[in-house]
Structures are given as structure tokens and as C-alpha cells.
Amino acid sequence: MRRDDSVSPRSVLEIRGLNLDFGTPRGRVHALRNVSFDLPAGQVVGIVGESGSGKSTLAYTVMGLLPDNAEVTAGSILFEGKDLLKMRAPARRSLLGDRLSMIFQDPMTALNPVRTIGSHMIDIQHHEQVSRGEKRARALEMLHRVGIPDPESRVGAYPHHFSGGMRQRVCIAMALLVKPALLVADEPTTALDATLEVQIIHLLKQLQKEIGCSILFVSHHLGAVAELCDRVVIMYAGEVVEEGSVRDIFHNPAHPYTRALLECDPGRIKKSTRTLPSIPGEVPSLLGTKLGCIFRSRCPQAFDRCVQENPVEHRIGLDQVARCHLLDEKRLVSA
Ligand code: ATP
Ligand code: SF4
Image (cartoon, rainbow, N blue to C red; front, side, top):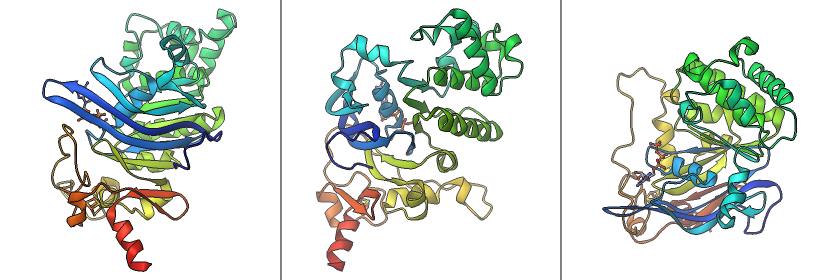
């Protein structure tokens, strides 16, 4: 939850007013607009939203792995109190694979096909002042922890010798071997079947508790988010529209977009159906400036004010915030 603008020692990550554009031949795509939230130390925060809502862009911005056409135009990303966006490139690079780790949707993004799993796992420990033998022993222990059978005999194998699920386990082992303060996981289970997804989520949860790191977990799978996360940030068209604890978001959603997302979740649909529901309409173009609520063209509750004014953040209870004029109207009615 966003508390105030001072540095909170209890948050490992504090994102404030983040704006990011992509330059394209059609104009500037405003992929992140005024994004603000905190990731409390030792917690897992899920980033949820439809395709194109800016989830991956946010994850890659935190990691500093953006393409050349991306430009952060405003905001800050405080990691352990230091603004990553103001850090010099070498200092920022040295955080990667040390205090900051990432798991990608496609494990091959992180694995070099012509190098053995063992050499990946030894190299990832380049910050550690211990012998190669000790690094190898740690690698074997971690491979064992993530459920790779007989790690001693598999450590010399190449990535293509492993199944997709096993490759993702190896990537989790690599990412956590360095005991990061923050693990960014971008759709790490999307390419896996449902059974493997459950196994990987349980594994991540267990290791996160053991290591005590925080996780920024990007996913469009609400079931996985409910299982793994402490808090949820709902994104729509580059904006954070709602944020709260898993319990509040799943049981008491305040924003019409969050409610629509939950209604379309296959895990929550009770009656049998051949076609899965989707939210009517499309995510709007992110080109140009937008007046009014970004969700208004698809919102069943939109009213005049939604066309004219951008909604501001409203607090619901202690721990939940949402950007919707309805919350303001309710307040006025009940005042
Ligand atoms: P998905 O679930 O499909 O991965 P997402 O929520 O992660 O979607 P992003 O991939 O972050 O969304 O994309 C956000 C917006 O930024 C989209 O409109 C996308 O087309 C645009 N975008 C992403 N990368 C680029 C790029 N390199 N150049 C131009 N536009 C981009
Ligand atoms: Fe819907 Fe208006 Fe609320 Fe936006 S501000 S979510 S359009 S009711």
C-alpha cells in the first residue's frame, strides 16, 4: 500500500508517480502512467491485469532491462531506499543477480543453450567470495531444494536436456541462489501446464519464506496470485486502478475493473460453460493524453464525470485504495 512520500524502511520497493513512454512510428505509447505502490519487505505483491496493461513493462523497468525506445519521463523507483532511476549504470548492473533477481516467462531467456546448468549456477554466484568448489556445492544443494532429481548427475547437462518445468525450476534455483532482497517474476508459470504451475507456485512460496525475500509477481492468473501473494496491484491500460491485500481484492473489490476481472476468472465460474467470458470491449490505445477515467469506455457504471475527470485515489478501510469516482460519490452521499 502507498503510505506517504517518505522513505519507509519496511518497504523494499517504493514506486512513486512512474511514467514511461515507448517511442513508436505512430507516436508515443504511454505504457505506464502515474504508477505508485509499495512492496513491503518479506511480502509477495501480485501485479494483475489484462494483456497490454503494462505489467511486464513495470517488471522490466524495475530490473532496468528496457528496450532503447523506452523512456521514463517521471517518477522514482526506490529499492532499499535508493532511487534505481538515478543510479549510474555500473552500480545498477551490480545489483542484478545480487540484491535483485528475475525469473522470466520463458526459462530460455535466462539460460544459454551452449552452457551447462552447473556453469550457469556457478557464474551466478560471482559476487560471492568463496571457492568454486563451495559454489558448486551450493548449486547442487539449491537444485535439490527446487526438486531436480539427482542433481549431481544433472549439473553437467545442458538446458535442452531438461523439460520446460524443470528448466523453470533451474531458473528459480539460479534466481534464489544469490539470496536476493527482491525477486521479480514475470509470468513464470504461464508456459506451464496447470499441475506444474501449482508445483512451481508452492515451491516459490516455500523458498520465499525460507530466504525471506520479497517478490513482485506478474501474472494474469488470478488463482496463482491468490495462492502466492500477500497483496495485489490491479493495472489497467498503464495505470494502477486498485490495490489491497489479497483478501480485500478478492472478497471486497472496489473498482469496476477489478470486479469485471474477477467475474471473468475461469477459477470462479461456477456453472459449466463452453466459452469463457471476457470483459466486453478492448483496452484503449495508449497513444496521446487521456481525459477522464481510462476504463470509461468499458465500464458499466460510467457516468458524466468519468468522461471529464481523472479519478483520484480513494482509501477503503485501512489497507485498500482504488481510483474510481463512484467511491467519491458514495462518500458525498453518506456525508
Ligand atoms: P501481456 O500480459 O500481454 O504481457 P502486459 O500487461 O505485460 O501484457 P506490456 O507488455 O507491458 O503489457 O505492454 C504495455 C503496453 O506497452 C502495450 O500497449 C504494448 O503494446 C506496449 N509496448 C510494450 N513494449 C513495447 C515496445 N518495445 N515498443 C512499443 N510499445 C511497447
Ligand atoms: Fe467506471 Fe467512472 Fe469508476 Fe471509471 S471512474 S471505473 S468509468 S465509474
